[in-house]
Length: 224
Ligand SMILES: *Cc1c(COP(=O)(O)O)cnc(C)c1O
Image 1 (cartoon, rainbow, N blue to C red):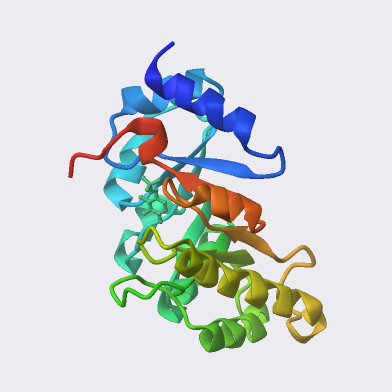
Image 2: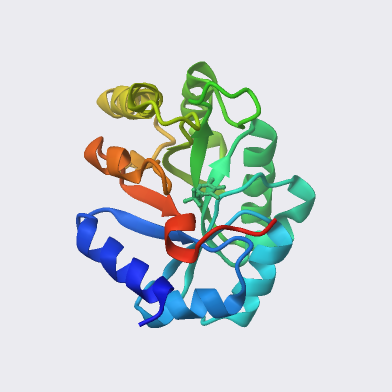
């Protein structure tokens, strides 16, 4: 068995059955995706619109494609027709553009709001206050389904820092869920949490992640 299939099988054994694995295939060729596919993997994540589009149109139609990168509004057409979920909505401007596209094209896109939880200021995302505002206005966006939150922890080996970052997602999700009637535009099952990558997914699973996004552990190092 190839190394990709081996990694997929190990992860399937390790992850609780209620945790969804997004295999992050960015910068890896279609053949690598197909090795994971042949091992049974059906959910993949991509972070660049062109690459996302090229893979989505060429690879099997039963793949569920998650978009996980920074999405510029002039690239929506490459992504939205093919995506099962945009995990990385990081601005009101983007949310409004996805909403408009959805209304115009009759497709409601499932999205997560990306929260800025890391110490690095280079990482994208909303603050807690901004997310509460967006959640309060959710009924304005009939072209999207806001189903939860996504985040990326500080890149560090210090578990205390990683846990502190992740706990911001968990507590904000719990806070919104406990007063869901204040957010009438959110779906009743609001609260999907996507956090955890190759170096911190075990902590994420322990802390209650619903989705983990794992690239390097499955596909090896990326050549940028
Ligand atoms: C690249 C990427 C991942 C996967 O990272 P690995 O460390 O390779 O597992 C997960 N989430 C996002 C948003 C990414 O851009």
